[in-house]
Image 1 (cartoon, rainbow, N blue to C red):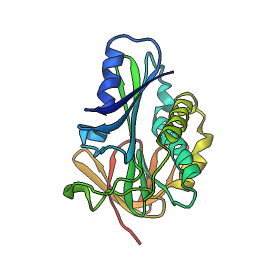
Image 2: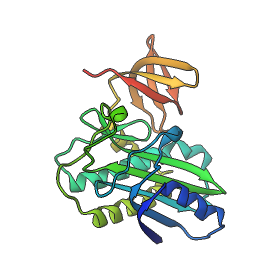
Image 3: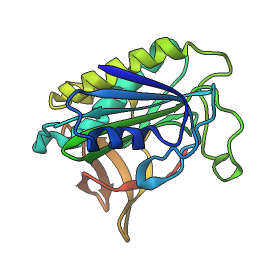
Image 4: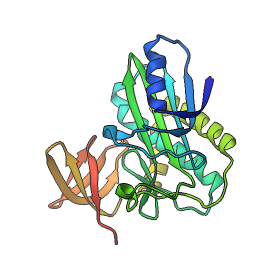
Length: 234
């Protein structure tokens, strides 16, 4: 896999999109020390200052999607990413917020974005390793993993390998047991936004198909999409 390294870019995700647009045939990764316009789900700005985080996107041309397993892709990536981070930070209680965020001490420290473009798949990963000075509008909800310097190259290489592996193995749902163990939501009351509709209830589990199972009025309902907008902390 070709890995392109940059000091600063607008967005690694956009670089991956351009790569697919140009009909390249081989998978590639785009790694940046900083981004001026990094973004996550729903186009939200992802703060990406230099020397404090890991930011990359991987492009997979002509990616064949297993339609009935597609809800497992992001959970598989997230599980693999946390497994790598725990190797470097074994004392940190990293948790997964369904479906694409990684949390530590009730604050988001990483996000994963999957997009489909020009018959290809793009997987973007942004991690706040040692990012402290967040913009005021996200300071209350954004966190970081460590106060110390980190091995950027080694960690990035292991993460790239882990994400690449997830792109091949997501259809084999054995990882879902680990995903559930890492869940930040199971057993908590949440608000789930579905377009203009909102569902409130207790998260019972995340099933083997990657769906969020919420109990409302003693009835279990499964959701394959939506955004958890509120989590009741105990």
